[in-house]
Length: 231
Image 1 (cartoon, rainbow, N blue to C red):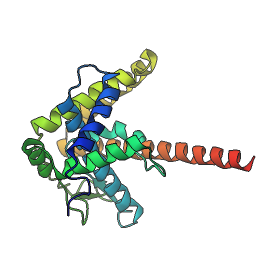
Image 2 (image 1 turned 135 degrees about the vertical axis):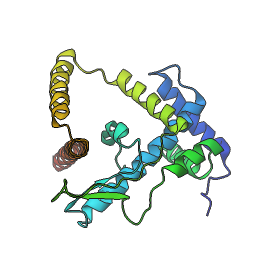
Image 3 (image 1 turned 60 degrees about the vertical axis):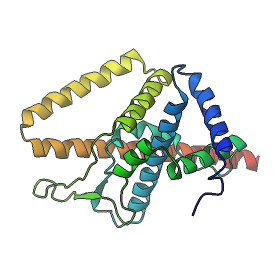
């Protein structure tokens, strides 16, 4: 079934132009087609993230570590704090959401082919790993090969992220030192399978930590609103 605004190309283009205007405030080199690619990529990431959260909340994966089969998922984890469900939406929000839904339905042939390559089953996550015995059982992970269209969109998002958030020099120094330490320790292990398991555990811990911080922030905002309403 087609979306109710499937044929309304004017509305979709209007939403695109507004998004482009906001992005150009940060990076003036972004083009109309770049915004379309980013919109598709963000929608794909948000859908995959919601699916993984639903799987973890269901309890069926309490003893398993769930992995996404999207090759670019870990590269876009910095988007998680910016993805949340809004109870109310402005006119611009609605226009943008309409555009994103339509772009997944009606997209150019090149982008459609790329997204179909990285689409995952809805019944269950493509891969999982039992944490009770991470060494004896090999993790099977089906990944699509990087597509030039999505790779370009990922690079654009990273470029925007670097320009928006400029980390402090001292913090970068401390983090880089620890990263170098981890890299040297991993080299000393000498077993590729164990190193792959270690990388997976580190990424999973980072993901859970970011989710916890996001939930704490949302809970704090809720408490502030309730206190203000009480007063």
